[in-house]
Amino acid sequence: IDEQCRAVAPRLAPCGNELTVASIADFGDPELTKEIAKELAENDRRLDRRLASSKDANTVAFTFCLGAAPGSAFPAKVVACWDRTSCADLTRCLFPPPPPPP
Image 1 (tube, rainbow, N blue to C red):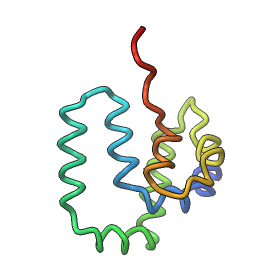
Image 2: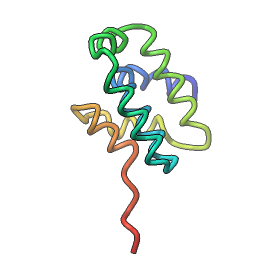
Image 3: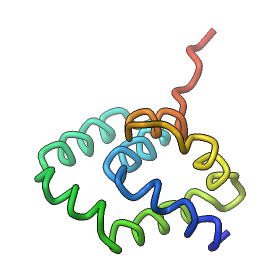
């Protein structure tokens, strides 16, 4: 799994904030999700862009993949969603919203 996560980390690296919010939302705590999203939105976007182009961003993305990967096909999902042009689209592809209740 290490090699697979290393291979997909460059695609995930620019989308760290979005992936963080989506993974928290996946736990089903809407209040925490809103709080984290607000804090991330208040961050300096220039810092996010610098991080996204750095080795640190790839390390963060690699670690995120490893955390999501045990018992899952997360790296394969990243490959399947690779062509999404925005971080929002990539995140929606990786963490689709749950279906509405019947």
